[in-house]
Image 1 (cartoon, rainbow, N blue to C red):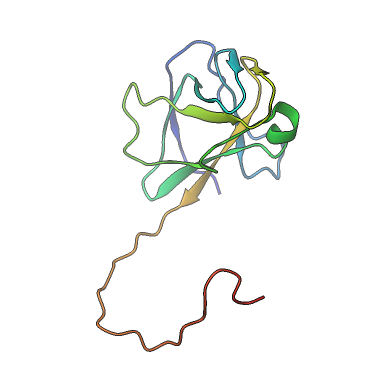
Image 2 (image 1 turned 90 degrees about the horizontal axis):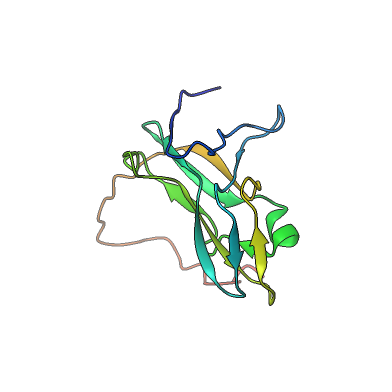
Length: 144
């Protein structure tokens, strides 16, 4: 299944995302700028793209599987979430990266360091209840 997605380029060097294989569920993202990242530093790199997420979807941003080993960086919050209302002319997708190594890292313009995936969203309708009748199951690691 394919969904139509509008993309606005804020910079001429922005690379339009593409799926690198027929079985790929995520597309690659790359920065439009070089970066030098000191150990434990967090940076936000511009992609030059505003991606208008369709209604009833979210865009999940994650590191490519090779990014930590290859470049020594990760996404500090684990993954990013882009909402449908983040779609104004200056709502550029930024790649937040943390250098977890003990060396200064160089990221080059155009390096495929992150990936994005559209995921359907189902919103909850929360209902307050007065009692819970199910038994306690335990906490962290309670199943062994």
